[in-house]
Image (tube, rainbow, N blue to C red):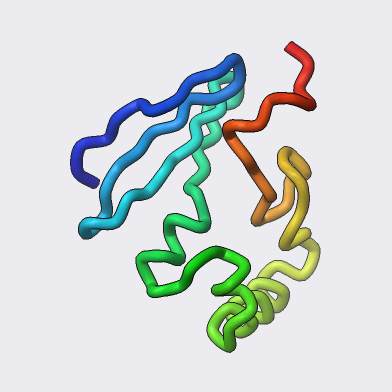
Length: 100
């Protein structure tokens, strides 16, 4: 990754922006757990999709979901933020529902 920069910080998270082969990719670091997440929309744009929803609705995305269900049958694949799901819906800029 080239030139990783801090672009946003709030009470819970630090958000960094980097480039992978010329594509912007955001990383979200939870300041309390040190868990690092990658923005799925940014990753799938590298492969030519408009969004994670666009990718998951494609044949490749559906194959990926089926493969994850086979490999990890007990794991929840999709969920809300902090649900423990493999892929969580996460808006790092929306803190309106968080208690500080």
